[in-house]
Length: 462
Length: 72
Image 1 (cartoon, one colour):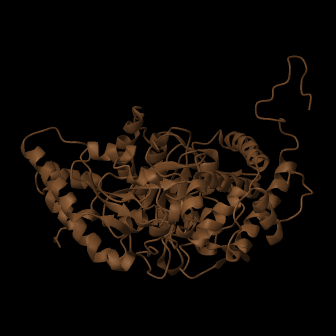
Image 2: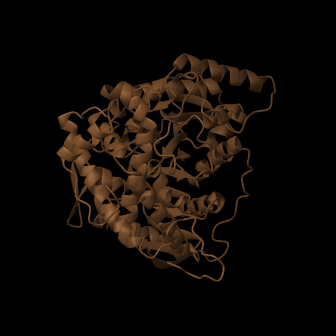
Image 3: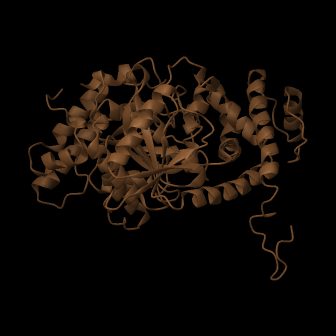
């Protein structure tokens, strides 16, 4: 293993080393694969990687650089991909024993192709909750992922392998997907950053779906600056130019502090979050409470739509490969098959009304904020969590507030904002305006410029 | 089943009947309880939706004729 730990660097830092010829892509790739293999037994972040193919690609990139060819924006940067993006040279399992024909198409998903086109090294596929149909990452055909901050705690999910890989400093960036918080939940639980872009912003071609009304592809990284770097490349797969970056806090930003979320936070999370709000105020933020009505009903409506759409996608697979599903996932799909058209349409109808109300309530604000999760990452064996005297399943505790960004389609970023009970990370969610990820990430970058939570490293990778 | 606020909760027997009517194979018994729990949460939400949508437009595409105002 190299003495230099390249996976711990940011995209910009790595790019500087690569472009200045201080290091080769082959050296970066070798160190990255060495560390994936060294930590795999401990955190189980990956389901597949290919040392030879990655090294071959890295050497090819080095040759291009030597020949003076133009370099891509992610030349030589190692990136991990959640295992529900199909990839040409690595198997795609979606964390399941069930195989979808698309997984064997021998093609790259649009976003994977966009990363490769810019010179990224796709170093492996990350572990995930089976079919992205859960937020704990305890259920996967490859076994559960382990939180690098505390091995007895979950990573959150469903992009838990990407979260763990970033926390363990195995790669500087990864792809996740998010239907009810699946990028932001593991980002918060693992102390890294994750962006769920505006619904429809990024291509989902070649991304195995969970529920098409909510599914969003997006980047995960350790810093908001790296999320911006990734987004700039990923958005090109749609053929739309990214909007210019705006400077955060150039005027007094109005920040809406979301209330009425339907689930209080634990004391430890609330304390950390209050301190984070204080930082935003110090930076010039003008913070006001925003009360949301109807969150519990919205959560129920989200579940109806989720189960009905997932059942529609999975029905043909279920008919042929029922035994391949875990009981946890199969129960949800089977229930989804019995949801009536009128229930589904009522839920979509309510969604329309609810979104309009949220937009009215948030209209005067530049940002809406809340804790990403009401709890720190729960212990792996915990079925029910006590939150302010209310027993909640781990699954519900993960998704109960995070689903809001999917239900509304608004972009949301989760960034580390401190540590709570047991030294586990806490995430701050900022939600912005449709298609204005530039401002959203600028605010997140401003917060990270004033704090050091995103720089903390778990012992595993130190 | 319908979207009435009065509709009854699910139980394993109802799940078996519903699947038989639709020509789906019986579920393994070990899954029935989980399916029933999810479907009953759907029933609870459906009741809430009836209340929440009482004053909403009858359909997302509904528009009253000009001059007719709100004919709900």
